[in-house]
Amino acid sequence: MDAAHIRNFSIIAHVDHGKTTLSDRLLHRTGTIADRQMQDQLLDSMDLERERGITIKAHPVTMMYRARNGETYELNLIDTPGHVDFAYEVSRSLNACEGALLVIDAAQGVEAQTVANMHLATKQNLTLIPVINKIDLPHANIAQAKQQLEDILAIPAETAILASAKEGIGIEEILEAIVARIPPPKPTGQPSLQALCFDSYYDTYKGVVTHVRVFNGQLRAGMQVKLLHSGRTYEVKEVGSFNPKPYVREKLDTGETGYVTANIKTPKEVKMGDTFTDARNPSAALPGFQEIHPMVFSGIYPINTADYEHLKVNLAKLQLNDSAFVYQSESSVALGFGFRCGFLGLLHMEIVQERLRREYDMDIIATYPSVVYRVRLTNGEVKEIDNPAFLPEVTFISEIEEPIVRSFIICPNEHIGDMMALISEKRGVLDHTETLDPRRVMMTCVVPLNEILIDFHDRIKSITRGFGSMDYEHAGYRASDMVKLDLLVNTEPVDAFSCIVHRDKAEGRGRALAAKLKEVIPRQQFAVAIQAAIGGKIIARETVSAFRKDVTAKCYGGDISRKRKLLEKQKEGKKRMKTVGSVNIPQEAFIEVLKA
Image (tube, rainbow, N blue to C red; front, side, top):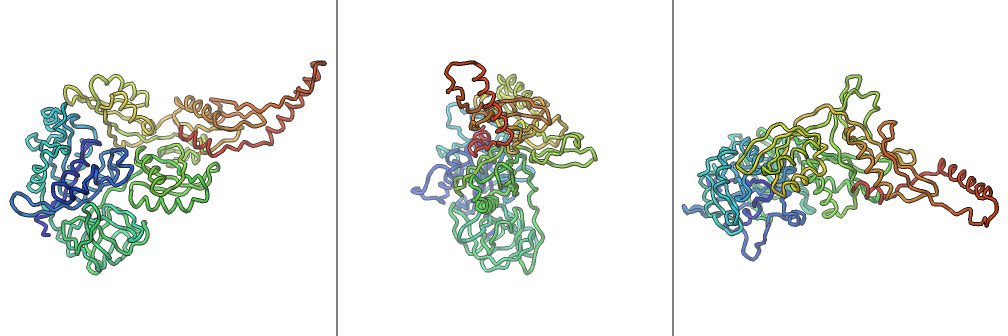
């Protein structure tokens, strides 16, 4: 199709504002999906996406739409995730588009992620079409949503389209606006093919399938193409588009979005943001994406050590489908061989672990999540540490810097006091507050990243009864009083339970871990001491009591000294046993404690 009749657009919004339902409606209205194939959340193909009601992967789909002017247009839609942990997925999708539908919930208004996604889109100079969705809800406040569009996002309210994806209201207006307002793709003026790789997945039969957006020239089967980053040359086997299932096409022209399969055998050969060009007559590379840096690290180990190689292969396939996920091999005394994995956030970590269990049928155990610390040594050297095991001795450390994030929290006015208490509990500093409308404020605060890892988002939701939302961005490093907390079992440190915590929180954390371990370590013939320590100082202790054999049972009456003699003899035996005996911590104990 000629470029003038092609429109590439994406749908962006805060999580749960109705993106996926809207994309279902557009598919249905353009006749891409027959009535009998129609189901809710059609583009969310993973079980996990359907269960949790969130989009995890960006899904491309090509639709043919006959406009009111009688002409047929090819609309290439990419449905994107809304959660802050998948922002990289959104930024990659926006690179392949000229415009975006910005969806706002009429009942909830502009949320933290709406603002963040809008900034991503304006950075790429995309044309924004605001859509106020869910206008059929009884508590929808359209006037307020329009006011927020102007006040917070600086978008004229009259450009907004009122719609209800669930009821099918306003779908026709949205399609017409896409044709009228979003500019058609323009060739880059290079001598030959330029196609941007914005996503990929692994197919058992076809190998690596790459999602591409053609910016210049055309892509057809049988061509020799070159990947500019790796410098390798491949023969194109097949090109096609999605509707939402992949279907084969003769060629992909300038401005079209689709997939390409070539003889790419291993996931490592394709880098996201790379450019496909003609091998014989190469063009310049397209601007790719910024390198993404993981924020949260955790060790993933197979429960059965024989599954190590199997896990390695599956992690490579998963990384192809999720390029924000990184991993490298490591070993632990307690858990054997495994991988140190980097994630964008806690939800991202949870999703990756769940996908390994479900899609690849792996039995895995994950260590406590940690962040990357910068350690300044006394000799002036700076080390980046993501695993407590590699922290140098205290005598060599001049200071430890922890990563901090700037967090934007939108919450109702009546919960400001509780939110401020939560921020100070998490060692955060409130920067400033802005009033968004008569009911809500936006609080900007600076918080250490390791404090918001575990339950920060959940606490915001429970404090504000579900009305609060947050978004965050990396804001550099700052020096803090961080210490390494070790857990000793029978005076032996166990590396799997070590962590780096702030000195003020170390005691509470140590007590909680020691109490949990006491429940799960089996009793021995001798008393086992569980201690939490910072350096040489013990800050918490629990004792697993010993099995006692009643050695005085054979004494019937008689002098007390006879009983005492037997007890002393037993005491000596236990003391000797304690020095030579070792405590084997069962795998279940690790799993229980790491879950806690």
